[in-house]
Length: 325
Image 1 (tube, one colour):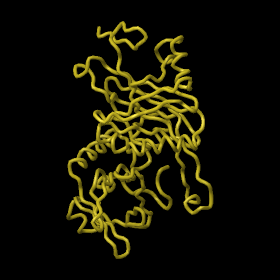
Image 2 (tube, rainbow, N blue to C red; image 1 turned 30 degrees about the vertical axis):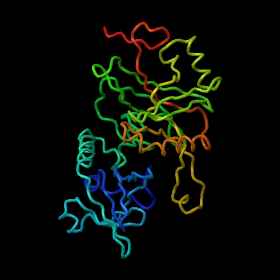
Image 3 (cartoon, rainbow, N blue to C red; image 1 turned 135 degrees about the vertical axis):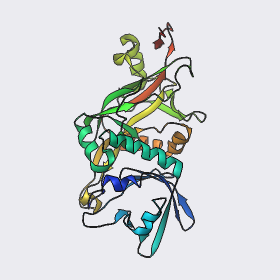
Image 4 (cartoon, one colour; image 1 turned 120 degrees about the vertical axis):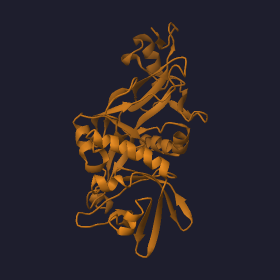
């Protein structure tokens, strides 16, 4: 699991009050932590830390800081401001209201559907049995909405330590008709290492796209082979201009003994989801490059890419065709 050693993450009702984006202020330094379930991702660095709670304690803990949600002064402020403490130090979190309402609404929708996702471990259990699908945000898998939308696509992708197939669902990020002349489609490819693909970020759209395919590299060989196989699942390959939606990478899992330096961390295969939208992709560019580097150094087996491609007009030779009828 993703919880830190020493105890669980507390009850869903209490953790729901923490969901969303906050402004963290200490000694004149501001950060933008976003809480999803019992995980905190820090906007500037992309680092992810767990919020934990020991069974016999009333305090939530985050990197040595403690929070008492049962304190009357905290309740009176209705979680618009939180005070974390460490000895004689204080760290203040102030609610970023608009974003928190959106995130909390998503959490409530998931709970109503019976997916206690990031709160009590039920999501992990259902996900491992193939009962539900996940959508990745960077390294973090979150429950996909109960109802799939038109154009959504699900894929079985190996993740974890040891790797096991899990369901992932993606929605199309590119504009669709009538906002665009042609729709897009989602697909997945497996490419041996080294993949021989260069990516860049479109500063206008925020999308990460395929900028270059190295001649005679593994992706280029697949492209040539697909010309004989044809389009469809068997003939899918990377093309210049494809939008990168997610890719497999390698991280490390630290157990209790690992955190104490008593055992080696375990390699874990994860699916890194590209944040959609101009702001999300731009802020994540450093994280994307870091995830690719980590996989290049530590990864094994083929690389998985989830891609989105704009369809060409029907009848276009050698391209994905779209028949509006």
